[in-house]
Image (cartoon, rainbow, N blue to C red):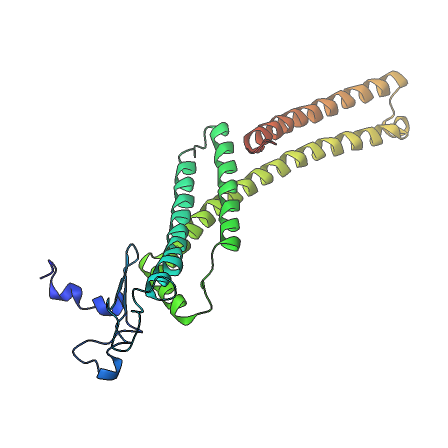
Length: 265
């Protein structure tokens, strides 16, 4: 007797048993006695084949125990490798998720160095995930119906589709945050350059105004016109340099915060 309640075992045959070549011995007809005797049990972390050990009447070798072309050969050469592929996919997804969790530990807005490391690691993990998707993530593994059905059982029991969707969503959330963050920084940088442009425009306008025949418009003597010219020029230069200095400091701060080193290794 199994140490489980009957309710927990109601879906056992539906979810775990693969019965393409199996008929219950109690209902098996004589013509199926030597053929429909192989059953596959797959729960994701374990895979078992159950079959008839001895050969039937008139059969020189048991199919189940045939290590060259029969069930034993298929188990060792095909199903074992299919299980490795399924578990490799799950291990790779868990590794990507773990790397992203470790990268999030570096997230600290007040520390530019950690933010640069967080950005680099997130981009590297995203690249690895894209490489994994295009090289290793595939819904089918064989052109044979039986092999694909068994592989789908592994995928279902190991929750590969759900895990893939979770990891992709985690990466998309991290990438969206970085994109919003960089958009804000680019907007601040654009504002800094706009202030420089305003200062340059004011200086250019002042010089253009004083370069025309200002003495006829203002009615000032030569020395008064010269003094007004230099006073206005000095004021414009001060305003321009103040705007430029503030914008340049902001630009250097943003560049040091988000600059990515050339060496990503």
